[in-house]
Image (tube, rainbow, N blue to C red; front, side):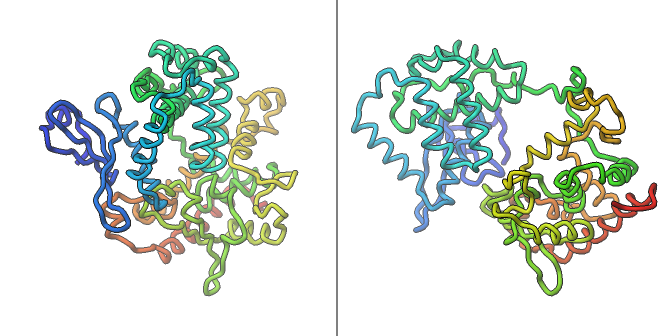
Length: 432
């Protein structure tokens, strides 16, 4: 069942509450406590369980974060219970946590011991930069004994950054994980509270995008058909990576990280058909045990782009490269599109409407949402459209429905190709 705080509060001793969508995550009740646990089977079929933390001190979201880490260990063939046992043995071998184990040491040990090892390079680098920026901006806090950090001091760190709530919330999560790592490793005394899991909960919420100094709130922007056509007719004004990236978003509905992470070995011809197969580990679904590689049939302009770029692949091995011969990444494309908006600093300095995008107020992810919306508009069934863009089905459906949808992907992306081309041709005589 889903999590119900009232049901959790009334949960009798000896009973457990399973969390839908998180296999093995349970809230277990004893006479005096309710504890989040992860129950799983080892490779030899033994049923094991490890404690995650107490409820309500540890929220559902924080428990899910820890559950993902433990489940990732299991999927990688590592027994979480054995890891926990080894950590406790190490802690007993050094019965007292290191004195003056500073905030700086906690953070850097977490970066080296977990962050850079367990996360993808791009995400790990961004998280590392955020943590190191905190240490540089507040050297007095970095030099503090981590075990002596108070709840008020944690609040102060986050409160200073509440003007950027999304970044502050991510920093809060990273610091909470760093303290967890210190506690698990035994370098922080087991009685040290992890205040990061409790302070500012629910108070670090983004007000939405800022345009022209004004919050415009959260919006799920979808370009209408007229805007899509106008944007496509303006494509010759974009540089090659921008032009091709925009087309790949609309023609495939895939994510930016997948588009700009394309490599020659992901492209194949099968019975005369061109396919782009994105490895599971390169998708957002990598953490899901039931996820599979994402299969994308290529048509029209998307196919032309891939075939052209296959002929000019550089030493880096990426189909999308920058001028230095390095990977042209998702954030490069996002920054490029932002700079072409009339409200961006560069757009304002240009002071020439003809050099700015003719269709404004959109992000690259809005192109993916537009592609998904157009699939719906031409009659594509929802479950097929979701499979095309790489969304995971509900757990029960994923368990029992193993159909690959390859034929359906080809049918509907071919129809999408024809639909988008019609939009591009509607208001201009020639395509780029």
